Length: 231
Image 1: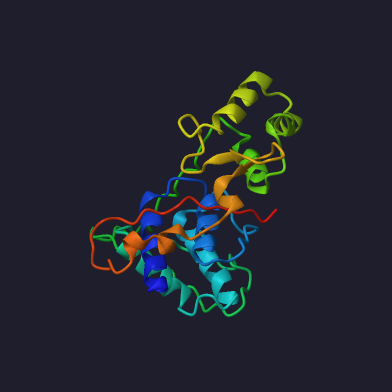
Image 2 (image 1 turned 60 degrees about the vertical axis):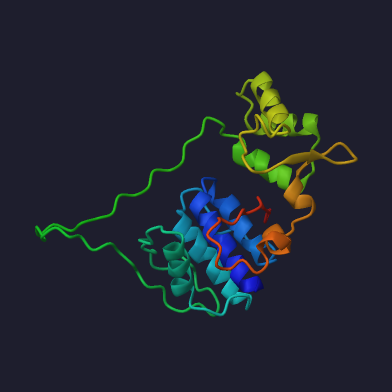
């Protein structure tokens, strides 16, 4: 039952994911109750590549016993999403217990014209908040107060407007205005700020009795926002 619920949670996560690759990877690790390993996750990775990277790490830890490519392809198929990733040679750098990675591609219905058809590279997600990833790292660690987080960002990006950064740090504490969606920030007893899911990372979808015995229901599974850091 737990494996089926976890699979449903991952499918729902893939359907709704619009966050940075590191956040997606952290949520996947927490669904397996595993410590996140984000060293190989980069900002230009697609959801397919993130799932493959996490799958290989889980298999090396003996938490996943299926073929990683088949596992990832099956999850994307259930989510109704195309799985058309081409993994560069050597991308996974000799992961333990990882079988060869198959390359899947879309077959064109048009006649061949003699020219190779290449899939367009997804554009890198752009954001005006160049400090967003840095803030997420500190909020995952829970090591900074409001003032400390503002100072940490300003130290890294001294050309920024301090008032803008201060407003950002205030906004992340209010779910209504926070640019980091689906991740609530709480203040700890010592005044430090931290993501609520980092205080108590729980697989809520599995514990929720509303989902017990509802394998055939068509209602979507609500996935809790979960994250972690490998800093």
